[in-house]
Amino acid sequence: MILYLGDSLTRGIVGWSYIRFMPKEPYKNGGLDGDTAHGALRRLHVYRKTKWYPDVGTVVVGIGTNDLLQPFLMGRALIWRLVFGWRRGWKRWADEKEYAAVMDEIVDQILADGKRCVLMGLPLMQLRDYPLDELRTRNKILWDLASRRGLPFADVMGAELTAVPEPGTDYDFGRLGLRRALDILTMGLCPPAKDRYSRRRGLELTVDGVHFNTRSATIAARTVAAAMEAGT
Image (cartoon, rainbow, N blue to C red; front, side, top):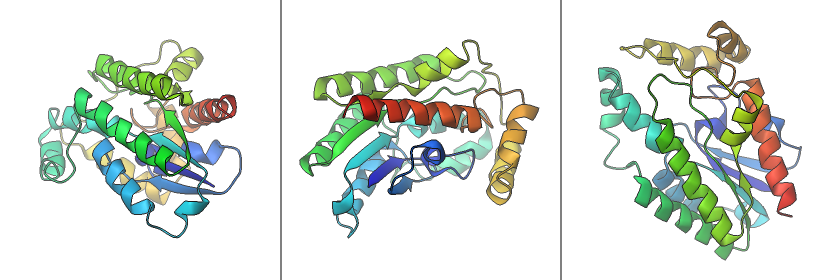
């Protein structure tokens, strides 16, 4: 069985989960909307005590997008300061040094349990003024960790940019964040709206600047599957 440990990109309520396009085999969807690296580490501790965890042979770890995204959004509009501000005490965001340390600890826990660990790189964000250089730095941290520990690494952002060399990166949720709120409601209630949103907004890789559309979810799944196969 595979445990997919991640955030909303893994869960797939807003946008599509890449798990949907993975080869069919038993799995647990350990995606949690809005989760961070610190949160994923805490949840891993919980999962290790469950009855089903001994059946897990591989853990695919795709976490870290919110450690950059949520602080970015807080600087864009008041609504995000209200939404995320109260959470900082118990689900803090990891800076570069913390992120490297937390990911190292996640890997330690998985390997200590005799599980196989696959690291999934962070995907491209198509948001206006998003700090893509910081995103590349986080992916370099993941690549270095995978190289140092001999783990399969799925370079999702690299695969996306190979498929779409010049994607637009100018989508915006708006000053009030109302688009985001509507997205969550509509996509949760009506999944077919996901790709319609993507086409309407001219976004080739996301439904809202962040979450996977069918194309990017398929790319991510193929990249993860290839990494798993190469590391067998």
